[in-house]
Amino acid sequence: VEGVRGKGVVGFFGREEEGMVVIHVKRSEEHQFLYETTVEEDVTACVRELCEIQNTRLRIQRLKLEGEELAKHGVAKHPEKQSLDEYQENFGYGKVEKQEHYNVDPTGRRTGNRCDPKVAETLLKTLADAEAAISKNQVAQKVYLTKKMLMDKVDEIRGAVMICYPMGLPEWDNVRLSLEDNEDLSGTQWATEHLDPETSQLWWGGGGA
Image 1 (cartoon, rainbow, N blue to C red):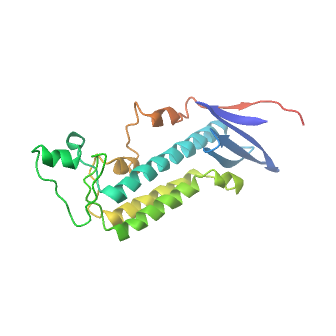
Image 2: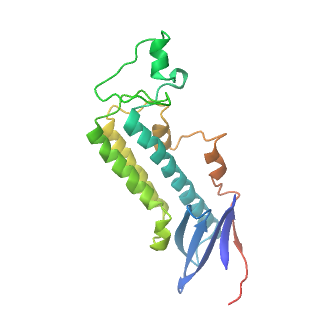
Image 3: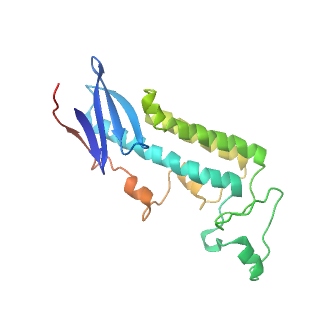
């Protein structure tokens, strides 16, 4: 039995055909994926690719969460101005701009001025498709993930966001930061899930036939 370990990530793989191996990376029942490579693949390159796939999976998860909020409640307010709209109006901090498709954000993080809900359906469907691509069901279906496959999903989300918000997103919006791969995850649970290719390792263990 052979595997990969890094921050608790463990995977096992075996031969499918001569010269090929399939790595099963599994953090939990919900978080797992398959990766196919060759016996000639450089170990360092393999580890890096596995880490990039896992980190991109996490990136897609964040895009799914924040993208749905974007579709429902519009772009993010500036961090210094985030508060409940009701509080802003009731305590004399100015009138809240409410456009045609206004839908108040109960967390106070977003403006509430969402795009046309019919247009937002495109974004929501794209997010759901991306989530399906990283689902544990891919393991049962023997779908092997690649970084390119996942980056294509990120690009599709980027395109859907542009359709919904052609004027662009503010530089502090988490969706934009994730699409630009410019997130600051320090101090978050996401940071503990991130894999560093410089410290992650492949390991091997013997097993009975």
